[in-house]
Length: 195
Image (cartoon, rainbow, N blue to C red):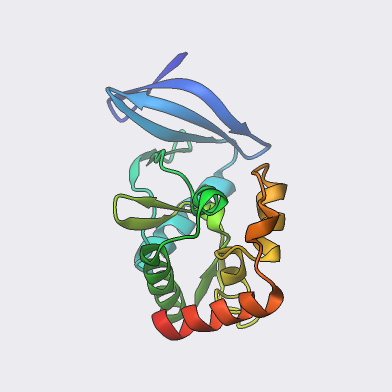
């Protein structure tokens, strides 16, 4: 365990969760609180991630809160959630109405702000009664890749969702997989209900 002081606060880096040529991501502790501690290896990636965070917040999308940062040391510290992702929930049961209501609300915020995000369900968690986007992706608006004609297929137990579950190492129940017709019907019903 390593201790780091960022703006007078002590963080204990407990585990290295991810590392690449741009960043190291640690599970960190400050007092009794667990956090995501990102240590960047170059300024451009640091500034890009900070900009993504600010754009998502400005668009009104719930994201983990930025707890601390240090531009000189290239550090970003975010709150960390331990609730299951929407994909983990889908593995066990169909997603509840609260997920879809908030997902379409996020989609409206994105449309208004002329951006798109990665709508795959492993990029979202429901903390308490609030859906949070925990992905890092943000794109300019694209009518071909949005929630309705791309991402929503992964939020119901479709063929695409079962492939994503398998790809991410989750179990797949072949009996739950919807036919293409059932999938399309679900997408239309969800869109009419929540859009």
